[in-house]
Amino acid sequence: MLCAQSMQRPPKNRAARFSFACIALFVPAVLVTPALGQVRGMYSPGSTLTGAGTLATSGFSYSNQLWSGAAGELKGPNGEVLPLQTFVTIYIDNNTITYVSKFKFVHARLEFSVDIAFASGRFSLRDPFVPGLTEAASAVGLTNTTFVPFGLGWQWKHADFQTSYAVSAPTGRYTPGASNNLNSGYWTNFLQTGATIYLNKSRSTQISLFNVYAWNTTQQGTGIHPGQNDSLDYSLSRTFPLSKSGNWSLLAGAAGYGQWQTTDNSGLGPIRDSLKYRVTASGFTLELNTPYKGFSLGTGLLWEYGARNTFQGRTMTITAGFQL
Image 1 (cartoon, rainbow, N blue to C red):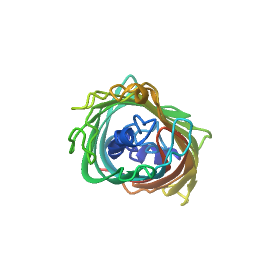
Image 2 (cartoon, rainbow, N blue to C red):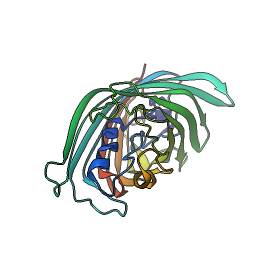
Image 3 (spheres, rainbow, N blue to C red):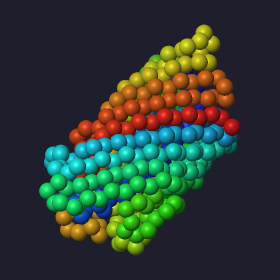
Image 4 (cartoon, one colour):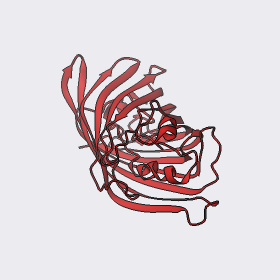
C-alpha cells in the first residue's frame, strides 16, 4: 500500500467474534458420535487481511465490518464429511472506535479501541439415521464486546509492526444450556501481533500477517473450559493508483487464513475434551482508498478447506472506515 494511504486508513477490526457459532459448541455433543468439542475460536478469521501492522493516523477513527460465514458441511477428526444434514449462517456487524495517540512509548504510538458487535445467525443440525433427532435455532442481538486497552505500533522504512492485548467480554443474552445464546458465556483474552512488510520503495506491494492467540475462561453455569486457539490472517497484495496524485488507489491481492485449537477442552467428557479443530481458507481481497478523511472500503472472500472437527464453508467481509 502507498505510504500516504496506509497511514490515513483506519485500522481493521482487531478482534471480531464468531460468537453465534458458540451455539454449535454443545449441539454436536448430542448429535455426533464421536462428538465434537469446540467448534471455532472467538476471533473471526479473515477479519484483518491487509495492513495488519499499520496503525491509523493519530486521533480517533471508526470502522464498520460486516463479517459473514456460511457452511453446509461438518467435518470429522480425519476430515471426513459427517453424515449429518447441517447448515450454519452467521452475520456479525462490528462497530470499532479506535484512538491512536501522538505520544510515543518505546518509540511506538499507543492504540486503544472498543468494538461493539451485533450478531444474527441460524443453524440446523439433523441426524438422518435417528428420526426426530434435530436441533435448530436462530438469534439476533448484541454479542460479545471487545476492548483493546493497550496496543503499540511501530513504523519503519520497510515494515510496520503492531502488538496489543485485547479482551472479549460476554455481553448480550446468555442462558446456560440455551441454543440461542448471543454471547459465549465466558471471557476471552487475546494477544495480537501484526506486520505489514513492504517489498518495494513505493510501498505499493505488501505482505500482511496478523496473528491472534486466544485463551478462555470457564463458561458460566456449565463448567466447560474451551481450549486455547491460534489464528493467522495473511495476504500478498499490490496497490494500483487510480489518480495522478495517488490519493485514490485500489489494493488487490490473494489472501487466506488458518485457525487451530492448540490445547484440550475440559468439562466436555473424555472423548470430546481431546478433539481439536482446525481449518484453513484462501481467496482474495480488494480495498478502495480515498482522500476523504482516509475513507476506505474493502472486501474479502475466502473458501475454507482442510477442516477437522468443525464446519467448513466460506467467509466474506465488507469493511468501511474513516477518520473522525
